[in-house]
Length: 207
Image (tube, rainbow, N blue to C red):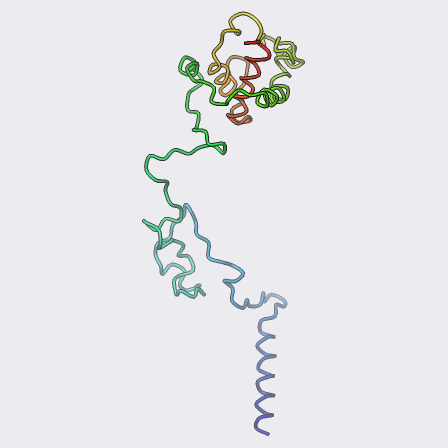
């Protein structure tokens, strides 16, 4: 009989407990193991190093305050590690960042094309030229593209001093822009620009 009563009591207690967790009216209910739903996030820029901050609200298993968000395993409690001293970020294709300014054309002219010239590179350069350059410069580089006719002053890549421009100069102008031509460095990866340069020199200017 005592066992039966105990079962009834436990069952009733369970129902009361579950009922208390149910949301109704203005009561939002309670969460079981709230950190399973709302994990403690490490903030990269906002560091709270006081482990007691938010202790009145905390349900953390480590006993620290709810607002404490510093990483104790990293130096200076940083959540993001700084790169090794003197390291330089590279692009996805492994190239170093291009740091020359728009006006540094003389320095740019000294840069050699790092992309090996092959038939495949020329074919890719042709496709890229048609995508990005022909609208202004025309399919044959004569400055007669549809947009070029409207804008005016578009370079004829087959004429005058443009024939003798170094590859680094052409690359730089595509990257940083010059005159009426806007910069394309944010739109075209460096490797692709070099392929366009190959196509301009080898196919359009026949050098």
